Length: 268
Image (cartoon, rainbow, N blue to C red):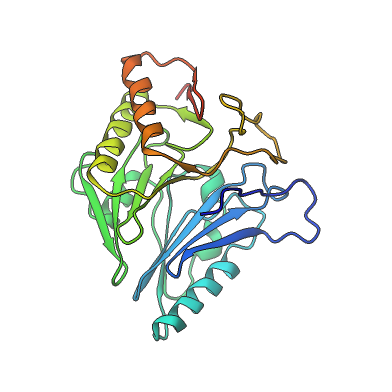
């Protein structure tokens, strides 16, 4: 896992749309270049023998299809199969994570999962939202889906059983944790912690990095160049801390700055 995910500044000269890193031959981490969007979101591709799951499509102004197709085709060759179906889903439905969706509409061998909680629940087989978990088998690679609304109603976390990587979207990452539904968020953080405690988690990976390496200090909204970023990976101890902060608020959320994140309630 790279310790630094520098996404560059405003100048796009010589810079690819995405920084692509392979965690292994079936899990790929991509970060959008800063010059294309200041949010610099991460997207993730997990590949099995039959299907591949893409989590998020970026913040726009980039070609998402080409790098994803390249990775999926290469994975198919390594697995000795002719095609692998691509499923496009989302950590949640905010614009900086769904802007590339239109590039996947109507494509052969591609499924675009709906953005609302009903569509997410139906696709991943979550019987009771948000209490129950869902699963998806990509072919020799099973993923668990944990519903974590609060930041956004359709937010999910994705757990890769093979690597132990837990993808936590905008609910848990080194930055400003915007909370729009405080009651749902408190329950979701507790649910996420319960899941992480019961499973082997190697990395907690969110969808952004907004904090600096200076404890308790973030980059202001709109910052393009972030050369002194906090590491991307979060820890179980930091999730425990987030749960403690949230539960102590007892529903009365106030902006709270901690070393590695800020709890930031917003008007729904």
